[in-house]
Amino acid sequence: MIYINFTDLSEEAQERLLRNSKEDVKHKYGKDIIEYASAHNQNLDKVLDEEAIRNLYSYTYVFNI
Image 1: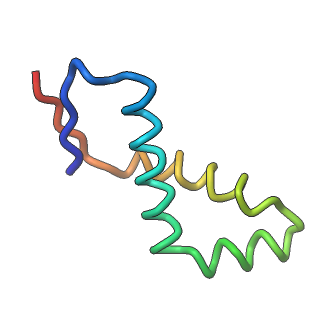
Image 2: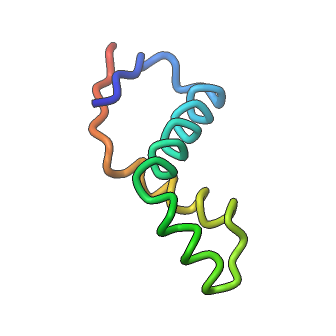
């Protein structure tokens, strides 16, 4: 679960969540993403960013008000 303060939905908080998600994706699927990017001539950073955004939807968020 991701705990977020409801009043802290700033751009910095969103960037932090995306950075954490990107690290999570690298840890879970790093080798597979690298192979996919090479096989399909894709930019690795772009593929990682796209997967990190998709990964954000798999989290459970708890908002503290």
